[in-house]
Length: 184
Image (tube, rainbow, N blue to C red):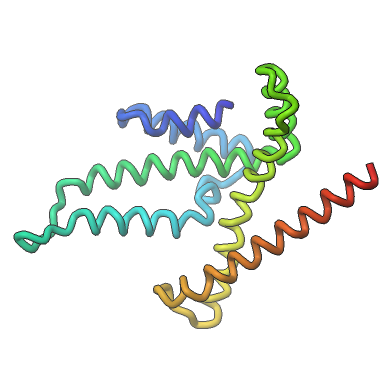
């Protein structure tokens, strides 16, 4: 819950609060034995998309030009996203999906939603999120090692592979859950 609170707090419109959140995340990552830069592992595509959107918004058509007015806002937004992403990475580094499911199950029971099984679905969904970024980073590394360039053609090649690997991972997880359900 604290890491979720940190993620949400990183979007407060105060640079002091954002600095405090980043400092707390750095401190927690050191305590957990995780290098702070590892918290951002796999986030490069996210930041490329965010920066690309802000650059496109800065292009002025009439008269032709480039506005640097929102550039500082976009950089602060990227810092906020980095803080939220780092909090999520830290959560997945120090907890398992089973621990997340148990915590959510206790919360479901407390608010009277035990029969809905939301905790199972949510914990499964959350367990897939870090897997997407790990697979993406592995694919881009393999692409670079084969002499591929980071461009639109790379996206056209790697996105279907990412989807295929995630579907395969989901099928394996479903088979494992089904086997546990029949045996238990």
